Length: 121
Image (tube, rainbow, N blue to C red; front, side):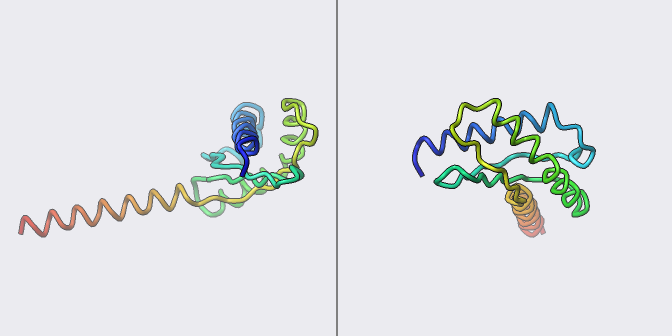
């Protein structure tokens, strides 16, 4: 991936994060969500936007529906904010990496506490 594409991915990620935080009022997006990364296609026609959503499965599904509904608005806003010849179409994907990381940390703490308990006995 070129340096230019990396910068563009970061810029799109920041702009979408800002828009979601300040301008989207959809109640389905009321849960804690984070734009973790953006991958644009080489021809800049599409951008995969990876979203981490904290909540139940139902909340996650509702949030993905809300993002799909907001994609046109987000596209238009990006087109106005970014000086690009072609603004990529946004495709949202769930990213469970933060949640999996939290689970791993929890398991590591459990193992450590069990080892300390076993050493004391």
